[in-house]
View (cartoon, rainbow, N blue to C red):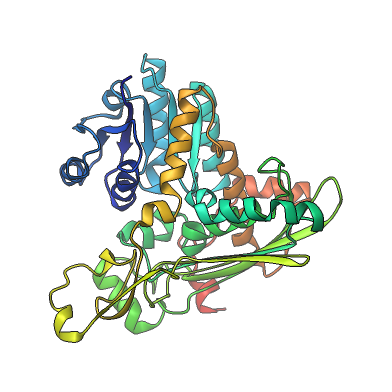
Length: 416
């Protein structure tokens, strides 16, 4: 049987990271790529990983006609245009089995809804890539605690954070192109995994009903003149004029529709975590039980002194977003598997082969986008957003945060 052929749209950081995940899956090849930049380097990486004979295609239509499924790993601000081209290709005869979109599904609720509708127009299964829900540690604690939950009841509180020193690409720092700051970038992860672990065992992933969101957004490091200038020099993005938040925290309240019980998911995200590198920290509290996951608790540590560190070319060989190549370093030997990338690809491929949506589909991605935008609305208004209010739901359909409009200076710098 021929290997399942994936096509990548985009050849940046996330595409190359996902390629490392594909290398750990039997029967899946990266057969093609379309990207405005970095395609040659990406193909060389695919060849080095031995995950297929990857061809560079000159159009999305050409890519779609030569693969089984396409994965959108391109920047947020081009997602709709890309999706339209995919749909046109399908209508023209491309026999795609599925479409993948990396988080977030959209920069706004309206954009996310557009992607959902376009996928329905093409009548093709979808996969929304939210890797943290697929983390083996998250799945293992749920399996381990299933009998405990059956006896004591589900979790009442989840806390989830993702923090690192900031994105790689300039567009990620641009709130207009990206759709905001760290809340849009990483809050979607934390909100999603918090919702997931709170969900009672055996219930659908959207079983718990979101009823309220309260959030705060702040600019704590990258608005300081010294670091603002550093960011401008490095990325060309001027946070004195169009800043995005580098810290966000908040609480989403959910209601169990069967029991009426309220549970809460706390999220915290930052682009100012300058320790070992990327850290995912999650825990959950129930009656008489708990779990905790920390991705920086590795079984491997290395130490590199000042003189020896001169030989280290890339600090990220130890851990994603690492800012240091010397001292005592946490080393994760398989980050794509640790963070859930391997399992989310396995799930998508298996689902597409069966002719169905992945465990997380575009409709789910839409719901996460709406929760993130409700958090932005809460931070702007300084109040809790009532998600049971039809007027709020209607407002969110056309809402664009001040930060995403490039008007976040007053909010983040406290100007009046």
